[in-house]
Amino acid sequence: MTRVTGTRLSVALVERLSQQDLEARLGVVLPFVTVDPEGRPHPMLASYLEIRAYDAGTVGLVIQARSSSARNLAERGAGTLILAEPDAVVYVKLGRLDGPLPVDGGESFGLGFFLLEVQEVREDAATGWEAGMRITEPIRYAPPPDLTAPWARATLAALAAPRARA
Image (cartoon, rainbow, N blue to C red; front, top):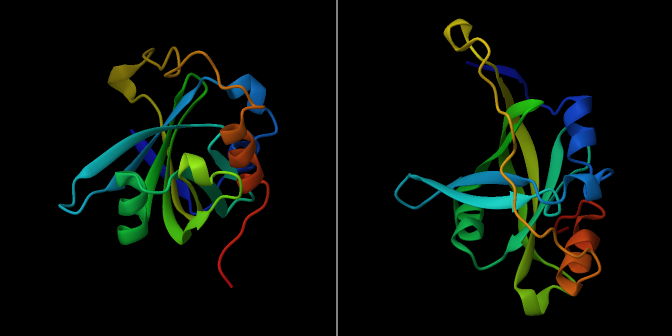
């Protein structure tokens, strides 16, 4: 059962999404869901490399600027980040503050930066009849990206500090 924990990330979630422990989290998938033009959920798979919490209220996201997810986020201004791991099952509802903005060095990869505002945080936990059931492994991909690759360096640089149009 989910419960709303507030409109800001907890200290633990800010730390988890801050990229401070990025190398240990590489390979873990973070589903991100936008809303398509027909009002249906539109999922994509992101990673800890592409998302960064700056504080309890703002998050940066770098994705393909011309993707359906980017278009949905730009047009409807909302997305939900899902963390489904053994130690945390959390849904973070986000609103678009700005983006997609260009990513220096990411032009040839089609990257765009979004600045997002945390609007609601929900934690999920097993109910009584689900006692003992839990997430045993996160969704993973392999091999993990090379952080020295040009697209990864551009992504990390774009997420280094929050930014928006003046």
